[in-house]
Image 1: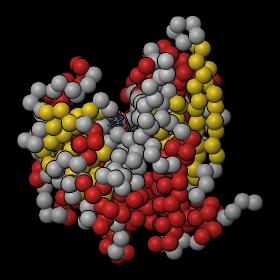
Image 2: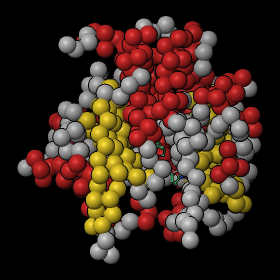
Image 3: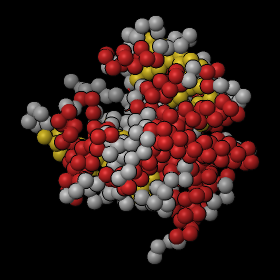
Image 4: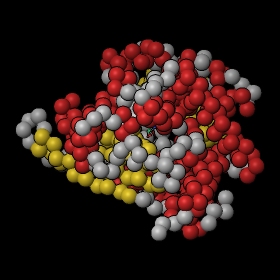
Length: 423
Ligand code: NAD
């Protein structure tokens, strides 16, 4: 009997897409072709095998990756993804986007990403812990507070970060707070980190609402993905009075044009482990959710959700990329032609890496800030990056994505030129 093969969310090679975006930025911003060639490649890609003793006595071997795209502006920074569809090229594309995101936010970091090909939902807590600790051991010489600093991404959370922190620290013989961010508060996490990505998205939407002469409460929003980014974004937007008409997780979504009761949805997800069956809402598929009538569509799950096949059916006038790479370049062109404004990933979901930066700084100083200080500093950085992107979009007569990537790539190119090519 053959096993059912679940189609990957990756229809196109994401690394090729990231490189084609970079070439376009190079053209639009007249960046030296030599530099674009350098920045098209990842500095280092580590591939490891992770043997794990399973609870039933068998041994499974998982494939893991850690990729550093660039360190011209500082140590590399980026999340670790646990998902069955992880590929080396996906990790490379995500690491390149991290370089641009950190540069756009003017953080002293380069870009990195990691991943393990696994289905974390099918692993017991002890299997997950053994897998995480072995993966950490395999990449232990590649990570570190001055070298490369992981964080959570799809399928990982504070608990996984705690195991990485502990494994690294045990091997060094002392606690190394700066090796990983997104840690629980009890072991050096930062206040505000958990919801920071969504809070950054909210600040972008607020800044855009001011440009449009509106208030956040004027918007209707549909949100795909109900994990760290999507669920917090739904909660924060609901709190600001926006009407969240649809939310979804990997099993499907729920829709109510009058607005979903978000506190009830959060409680239902917590209890039932799914959004399905939520009262006062109709079921909706993830494919339908992309095309719902609303002002803002916020993809907060995986890449390549809006493609050339469905871009002309997106009804939202604003797409806020909570996820990384949810709109393909071909879809981008269609949305641009149709006048849809895309708040690009490197801007719209940068709140996570910003507060990760704060956590790293606090860990190095062993001095921790209040939550209102964290949020105020986050607001400053996102607000400044939004304004720079908005101005560049106007002065270059281009899209928010091209403007954001252009600012970022120019900063990395300048750092690379200033440092000079070694040797
Ligand atoms: P998560 O694992 O906490 O949540 C992912 C959510 O997406 C879950 O609700 C899951 O059920 C849902 N999902 C999975 N497959 C889906 C599918 N095919 N269709 C619809 N929903 C699906 O992950 P996260 O940390 O919230 O990350 C989500 C996205 O945001 C990713 O693209 C990630 O790279 C990006 N991101 C995360 C952070 C962060 O701080 N966690 C920061 C920046 C960007």
